[in-house]
Image (tube, rainbow, N blue to C red; front, side, top):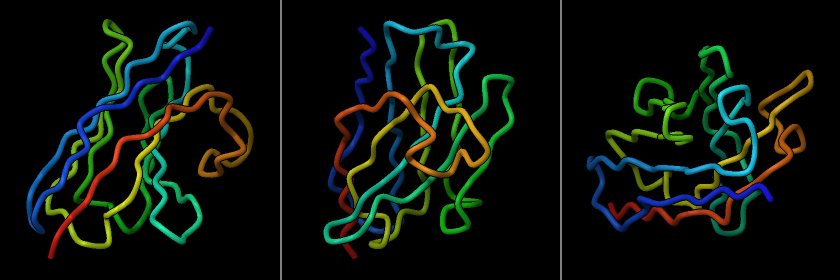
Length: 123
């Protein structure tokens, strides 16, 4: 059984930093493309960042230069370092695994999902 568990969400002030973690079990982690998505209240789920199993990364324009995605294959864990947080970053952040296909920025490209961790940024 594949399981993804996120942690690290919190209520912070604008300008602060947070580090989200996603622990994955039940699948070959080191060979999987992983991603972070987020969904704000009343909005659709949107792509944040991905990291391919060989290491290349991709970011949404809205977070480029502020967020950094990384992975530790020894611990089956993916991270999202978020700096210079803005009120617009407020959302439920979910990790996804098992990405495949032409467009890895689409949620439908991923087989497995976590429950999410809430990030709230006050302005």
